[in-house]
Image (tube, rainbow, N blue to C red; front, side):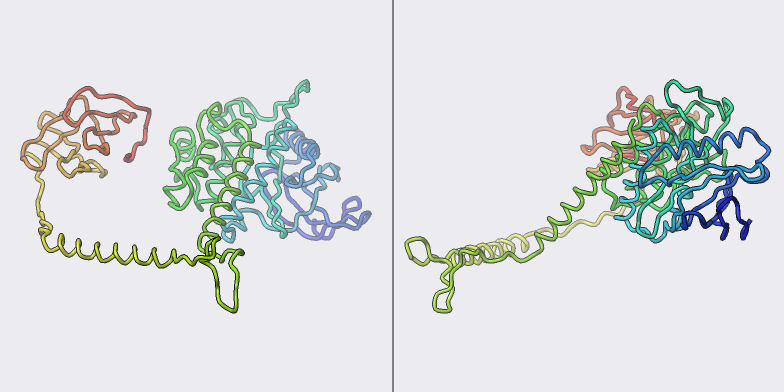
Length: 449
């Protein structure tokens, strides 16, 4: 359609194409401004359902007036094809720009997206397709949410046309919430989950769910807890980790219930991070002399007390420091000369006869923090599997009853208890034996502390 004039819009070039529309850059010849026109794709133009969803997009987005949401100017029709006239955003999608975004910018973009979504949710509008391709970053750094083609109006008192069949999924694989994947009813909390996925990817450079195909990805979204961001990038602050992981809770009731609150949490994190950075900078600066210091005849008189007597606090401090240094040197020479050399220990730990080591995956043994005992997962000649402990000053091993199917054992800091994963749970048992206690569900345990 490039070069054509539709109504009073002269089409200049195609900007992009997606499942719900083709977008062109155009000139509004009446108002002398650049706009974007979004047309329903020709192969979908005959569908009344897609037309209805297309109009719904215009109504949903036009109801919102917010700097972080693309402005809708009008909805029109040309030769039976509907199109939306919207603000022309001069910039790149978040997907295109992601590689050039630093950590500070990522937090700022997250706050802007959160505030835009909050404005939509206040109007009763759920986007249902939050992803990097639907976020534009303008050249001035402003983030804007695009494409409300999958939005669902839920204004109270209005009749909602069901544009999605019950049990079908809508959204983009990798960014959908568990309820979307399963075809269940979704609300604003689905946007919060997708927002959490987007934040995770923005801050770590990778998605929290990584199924190799769509079915595996859907399974992970519904069943697998993502690794904390600090595991992917150790320098990420735990408080920021907590904000994002709460967005990714499987049960919508356990997620943060307000995207506006998430934006506030991100602002608080940004503010506190700035304070900590300023504190570090201030601490690194040299301390300026007190303004009360006076110069007399070209010499400093700092150190004179109110009675005019000269005091030498620096001399006293230096004398104490010198005395301490000399004393420390003498004591160190005394004790180091009497210190016994560190013993070198070389040992091999053999699996007892009749027991096979369960090491197909790895992580099935652990040394106690005090260095006295090793625990390992194994199976005896009767195919009974579980945990075994052996003190390193003995060749005897002891089975721990009730630890069947145990994997990835780990020790408590006092070397008295052992945690492990079995049957989709994380459990704990005393190293000396005793009842096994179940702590929590953990279907994909890979080690703990």
